[in-house]
Length: 207
Image 1 (tube, one colour):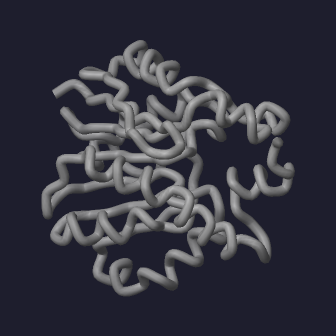
Image 2: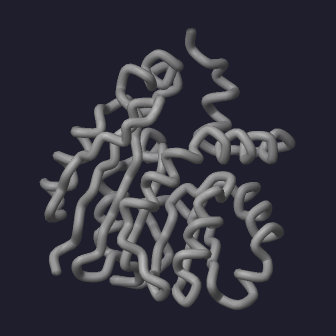
C-alpha cells in the first residue's frame, strides 16, 4: 500500500512541526544504510567528507569520530534539519570540524576539489536534476576522490508511492551508468545485503 503523500513529502524535505519526528525516523530507518556507506569509504583521521542530504544527521556520529583531525560537512535543503543539527553538534561546528550549509545538490557551495569523499543515502530519488547534481559532486571532489550513494530498488520505491509524487524510481544501475557517462572512473554497484535490498553505487574522479 502506498504511503500517505504527506509522509512522502516529509521524506524528501522534512519541514514544519513534524520535522523533529521525521529526523528521528530518518535516523532510525537509514542507520544501516549509513553505516554500510561509511564503511565503504577508506576514511583517515584527516579526511574531508561531505554528506549530501544528511537528514537527522545519523552519519555525523561515525564521520566525526573517524575523521577526528579532518573536516566533515553536511548539506541539506531542509532548514529545519540544519537548525536541529546546529544545536546537537554546536561544539564540533565551533571548532571547525563540522560545517553545515543549506543548498541543493545542483549548486554546492564549496570550491573545486574540496572533498576526498562525498556520500549520500536515499536522496537521489528527490534530486530535480541528477546529471547536474553528479557534475557538482565531481567538481567538488579532489582528484581520485570517491563518491558513494546508497539506493533501494525501484520496486520498493514504486510500492510506497514515489511515482505518484513525481519522485524518481530508477534502479541503482541507472545511476551507475550515468556516473560512467559523466566521466567517473572505477564505477561499480555493490549489494548491501540489508533488509531493504539496497545497493551502493561507487565512482571515483580521475586521479
